[in-house]
Image 1: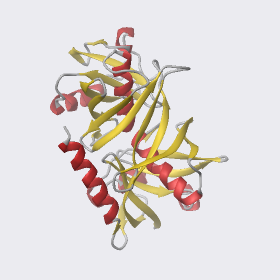
Image 2: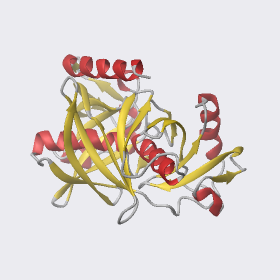
Image 3: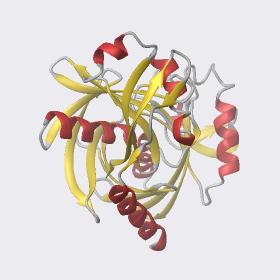
Image 4: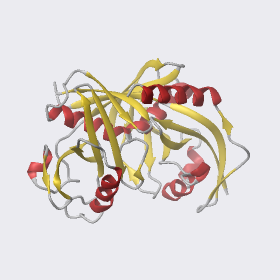
Length: 314
């Protein structure tokens, strides 16, 4: 039986169990991380993934596991939480880098949100092609993909993990669920699956995004999906490059800024909220909480107020 300290955290409502695998390196080295993720994500009523803060040579890094145990190459909401943990525990400084999925991401501590909510930004390089997509070339930028849906125009983007996004007038969550379930049957087009998003442009500087995530289903938000949707909106001419974009979701709001100078990349900035601290025991299959969670009520209240303000402003 192993024991791990963990933090229940979230980025824009995308909730995780996070473990400091630098401090707990010995215990995690002998642990099946995929099995731990499946068990840990069932704690506290269920979360969207397991985050591990790890060492990557002289730098720090993130490993992220979905509730089904599959490992994601990148997680935009998760990397902000891991960045905060690395910053607070190991003194990384205002600007540093984190590695995830074999890539290096520039991180910066940013101005807190009202109520002192910690904010971190990650610069995410965006690719237009990937071995994770074997569909028609038209689908690389606002094109059809009849095998998935005959009516929608899709854009594929690679952010370290694969994303397929479509602009719509109304975000239909039933349609989104059908699309997310359908892509799992299209292995010749998406050999390792894909994150599917629908986005709505409310103005040239405001979007709403909803996502069906690989290995997790529909979540409150997905950081790389909001990044992909913002980038696609700029590529399609619906939003402007080098302009601040407000990107709303069911969990709150982030800000994105897309740039095409020197390569396509997008800054994703948003909260990194720590809701509670706890300890879990893990027997290789099941995880159980040890003792009571220690909530952080000030942080919870601050984000609840921010989320309510975002909703009221719509």
